[in-house]
Image 1 (cartoon, rainbow, N blue to C red):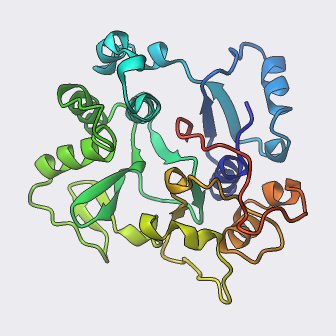
Image 2 (cartoon, rainbow, N blue to C red):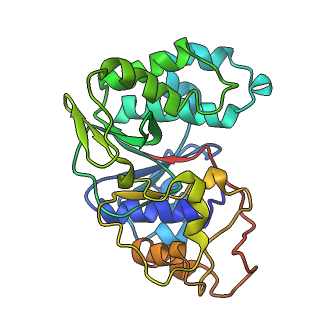
Length: 286
């Protein structure tokens, strides 16, 4: 119930980029929201988001979400204590089911939105051999989302990192779009599905994630990017945005989530910008 500032920034930046669309943050552990008063009480916990009428915070109910999908039987049989990456594979399952159920755009909550995506059906290329599962867009009950869920179950290897997320997307698209070649510099199409080149979300690759928390003399414009993935899983040092450091992440907060930025304590902490918030890999924006 205490999202990090990066999560709040991700939500605010999406709300600003999509003022005419609902931005929904699903939270595990949230009480059921039955009345309008319940919703108001939840919003009190997120003061930096209170002015955005298009932001909705909803409970994440796994069994309800997976009902009538290939994921339900997997979830009911799974033993979390025997799963090496349980929170991560559960998050992978949720994103596929969320897009099947609701449609729209799924984004991890370590993505800061730069500008709106005007294409309905897309996936993000991460490398010349792999797609991302951190952001993708599909309409409700799109056949591709169902294929993702089927592949998730049929090829389940929960002990292999990434096998149930980017691995699922890559396996399905390699088969479905075998004649479409990935391009690292230009968007390409497979039928009605767009393959976004890496700069759309990953202009700073995961091995360089610390650059977000370093000082810059001249900030890049990122004018070909829709959003920036800050690679929170790599951030084991728990670095956070610290006002007054002239870091890239501070620049992004000021421009794309100013409400969250203004709510941050305007005092310096440790030199490297380390914070006390733990990462939160099981949350996502739909």
